[in-house]
Length: 252
Image 1 (cartoon, helix red, strand yellow):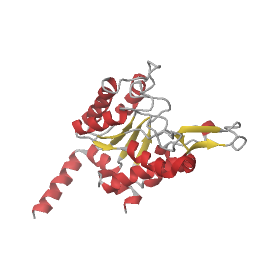
Image 2 (cartoon, one colour):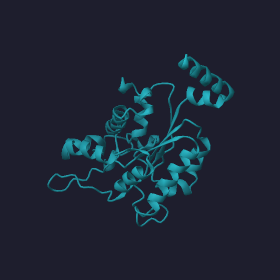
Image 3 (tube, helix red, strand yellow):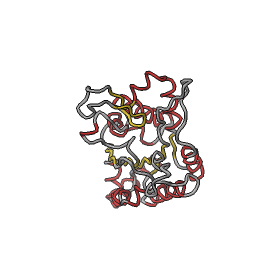
Image 4 (cartoon, one colour):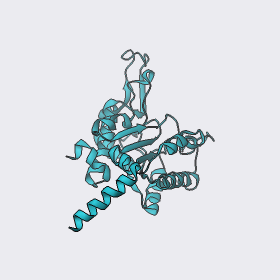
């Protein structure tokens, strides 16, 4: 009887607050970050953001809204008004994935650079607090690694303290965190110097109209690499039994 009474109470609550029904019926995931996550224009293909591939792992009714943009940092994304667009759209029950770091380290660009221990950390804190104030759920993701092998064939880090600062902030704020930096490092290191090219935007000359002279981009992903990273994120959500796991077919 107690369970039945609780169900009746929940039903009456939803009927008196229709916005709760809408939030439950159409769960939404917003993606915020840089070019490794974003949707690519036709002239950039086959470059692919891992957020584009994440949609292939989910099923209805979850909706993914990818607001990530090329070249943005935790600073410029806000200062250009891109974050306000997301914030204005947020509803109770939404989820927000936040991944910045690649462009925050652009020390020679004052429009993007952030000090990892001060402004970067403060920016991330503000994102998290504003998402929570909107009664949505934030999740922080550290940057994926660059394909940067030394002469000995060892993958060398290029992000410095940024991933660790995000990790510590997640602990301090008790916010969900996916260490995508470590997960991608394991993936690229295991692939090795040669096979890891198959994850990034590497093309010989005269093989694609967008890159007639070829390209050797060790930061941005191709479709296979984007799918691999999206798969790592999906696997993490499944393993930790995150609330979103019910919308991921890979969790079945």
